[in-house]
Image (cartoon, rainbow, N blue to C red; front, side):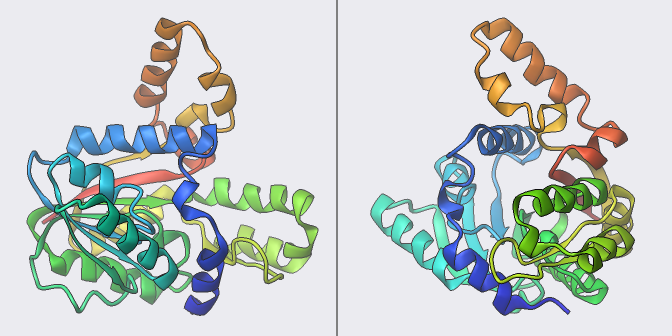
Amino acid sequence: MTDFDKIREYYSEFNENDRLISDSSGRLEFEMTMKKLEKHLPAEATILDLGGATGVYTFPLAKKGYKMYLADLSDTLIEQAKNRAEQSGESNVISCDVVNAIDLSRYSDGQFDVVLLFGPLYHLLDEQERATCVKEINRVLKPGGMVFASFIPYLSGSIAIVDRYFRHPEQVNSDNLREVFKSGRFNNSDTKGFQEGYYPTSDEIEILFNEYGFNKVSISSIRGFGYEKEDKIYSISDKSMFDEIINLIEETSADKSIIETCGHAMYIGVKR
């Protein structure tokens, strides 16, 4: 079972508000995610940003006219989001609530046109928890509603734990390293750093959503082959070359080898 207290504690100290703007990797993730949203979102929609932290996507989408409901497990992050909503006066941010992704009981059946799930699948260790999460998303979506779900693919996540050992050996030992390569589940052996993680293959994600009422629109890598090349990409002075590389990242993002090895990926599905 997922230790939700450990996740809350991690995000109470992690600077989630600046994660996608403080460096080139976060910038590329944000910009490529927004491209996917702009391509697939309906012109008008009521959107639940589930696991949306401080509203990194909530507020930009609210400015575009979408009615946004922000939800996150962390009361610390939700408090920051409420302060931001109050200071900005953004009327399209309807609510900011502390919510566990496996319990959406505060929301009505068919309340939303879209659910963004950018975070919870990184952490839900238990198969039944993931099933409950997806079933609840299905319930609160209207027929034909869309889900955008990010996940950390198995190879990317597992190899990243090896990299973590080099940087933070106190967080990784032979047992939890062996376990993550065996099951895709990571349990940090220290109290610092990313605490618990689940790293599924893209096939597992497609099966999960299909089983609980969704048809796949696409699965693709978010940063694509730009993964771990972000600083170099944003240092390109030739705009035509920069644009060409960004276009090629998009065009190749559905290649399965890229999905599995290039950081965060995204499933897009439609409720049957």
